Length: 238
Image 1 (cartoon, rainbow, N blue to C red):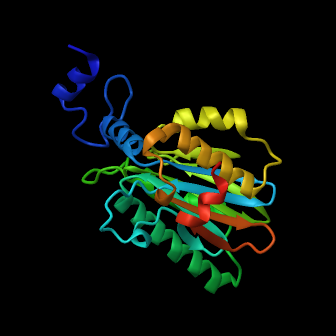
Image 2 (cartoon, rainbow, N blue to C red):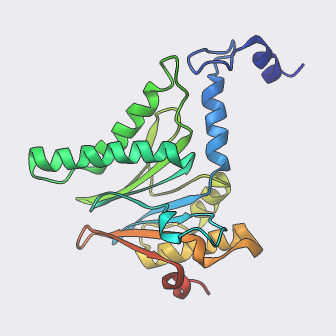
């Protein structure tokens, strides 16, 4: 019997707080698999700001497209996207929005991007340590401009890292491999959008449709989130 099947039979995957004999939290690993089933998002730090390009994966024509956004505003200078169970992401995003507004009220200044990702990561970590609740099945990508453009990604375990460019969701490792070859520190936001959309076009093949993408970007000049989707993106596709 394979080792992972033995662990399931013995019940090591029944709770997020129970380690298997080889040191794994199986419920957390299952949550990581859930993230990789979610639609992908790509984030990049550019010389003039940050950009997020997200695949909404909305195919139903009956759905109002603006109700299925994948780029969320945490504060006017911070944007986020996620992959996995998006209802889990909504809880974390709303918690972050409240934190950002409390900071403005208390200190009369915008919150820094790392404080947001740290709060999200801490919340995720709690749900791997206490019984009676499952881990958050979502990876969150945060991009913001506070002093300098920054990009952070938090996984389901509660770890987070700063990146120059990264991806979450379906085919994330393949996307990151392409980013390693094509990304450089001198790209602009426009070039970043072109790179991301080309990656999605290559990945999706005949399923590629420009109408399914959300783009959010924040320029260093004004530090305010701007959005594009659908027809506005056609100029970036050759």
